[in-house]
Image (cartoon, rainbow, N blue to C red; front, side, top):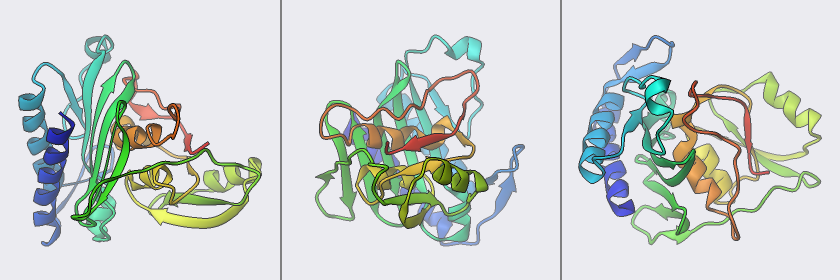
Length: 248
C-alpha cells in the first residue's frame, strides 16, 4: 500500500505544478488562510485514490468538511491529508510546499508520505520499515536522526512565514544555544530534523493535525532504535495542535 500512496502523492504533486507555473488565483477561507485551485485539485486526486486503495477507511482532508467528533471519536484508523501544505510558500513560488498523506492508527501516524514536487524531494515512512528520503531520480535512502543534546549548540529549523517572539522566549527559557537557523516551509521543517539537516524544530504557534501528521511519521521512524515520540496527539476533538518541539 505504501507504494500506492507514494504514487498518489506524486500524481497530486504533478497537478499542483501545472498551477504553479501560472498566475495563482487565491481565495481566502473562513479562517483567513489562503486557498488555490491547486489545493482543490490535489485534494480530489488524493481522496479519489484513497477510496480505491482503502475504501473502508475514512479520510480527513484539510479541504473537506471535518466529521463531527461524535462520529469520528471511535475511529481506530483513518487517513489524514493536507493536499497542499505551505500554500503561502506556493503563492510566493519558493518551492517549499508539500503534499502530505498520513495513516493514523490508534492515535498515531503509522505511515506518512511527504512530497515536495518543485524540489523533487520525497520523504516517506512506515512503522515497520523506518524513514526514507529520495531526491529526484536517485535511489531512496534510509534516514536517521538523533535526539538533540541541549548542552550543545543546535541547528534550529524555523518557519519561513511564521517567526514569533514565543520561539525566541522558548529558546531563551530552555537555555538553547543556537548554532544555525534554517528557514523552511511546510512539513519540510519536520523532515529536516528527521534527516539530520537540523537538530530541533520548536513550533510555538498554531498548526492543524493534517499539517504535521505525515512529517511526524517521518520523524518518529527515523530513530535508529525504537521510535521517537513527538508528543503530538491525533483525532482530538479540536484538530488544532498545541505547541510542540520536534527533536528532543
